[in-house]
Every structure is written in C-alpha cells, then in structure tokens.
Image: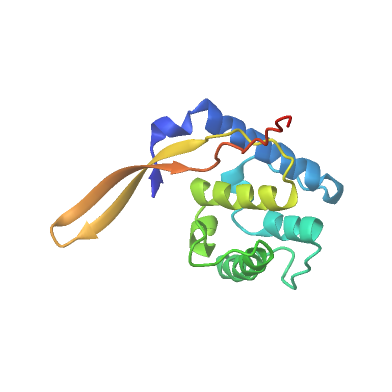
Length: 165
C-alpha cells in the first residue's frame, strides 16, 4: 500500500507522528536515544528493541547495533516476533512485518507504534480518527489494478458515561 501524497500533509497524521516521536523520546530519554523521524530512525529495530526492553521488561538477545542489511533484518525479525508475542498479536493479522518496517513503510510503523502505545501507555492521548488514503496495487493478467482505500490508524476512543440512577 502506498500512502497518497495528499494524506501525508494531513494535520491529524502530522499530530500523531509528533505525539509518537515525543512519547518515544520521553520513554527512551534515560537511554539517550533520540528519534527525529519515524521513517528513518526505526527501520533497523534498535528503537523497537529498547522500547520492548523498557516497557515490557523483555530482553531479546540480539546485536545492539546491526550494521549490515542482513543483520538488521535478522535483528528486526527477532524483535518483531517478541513484540507480537508481548502484544498478543497474531502475525497473520498485524499490519506490519519485517519487510515493511525495514523498508521504512510509514503506515506499518505507525500501526506498530500505536499498538505498542495502546498496550503499554493506554493513557497516552493519541489524536482520534487518524486515517490516510492509500493505493493498493495488484498485478493481474490484464495489467496493474489500483484500488484506493481509507486506512484507519487510530479510532475514536470510547468514553464511559456514568448516569445517575
């Protein structure tokens, strides 16, 4: 899926990215990790590794710094497996995977970060109803088929209303 360029300028999407970057930086401040770009700073697994250790106290035995692409992919695979288990997510239904995260796919990265934040910091206020327009491309016998869809990243939070008896 490819995010439509018009969606990339959506104020709600930009606010979500800003909130997530601030949350990551606050969470990992003690480890001297600073994230500036969700696309560029998370693809190799280092930040997810530290979030997993800090938030879930899960220690995964992988190289701290993976320099080669192969090492990054192997590390990311181990970390995402541990994250999916910790989040109690089925790998067949999640909206992220090693290939997407490592290729700097913003949509997959956002879905994963929102899942982590919801699980470990449910009081974190994420902008509600953030969605993007995406194009799903499929190669068929007759050519390339493109389908435009709306992909929701966050939803409206449910509010409990207490009524007097």
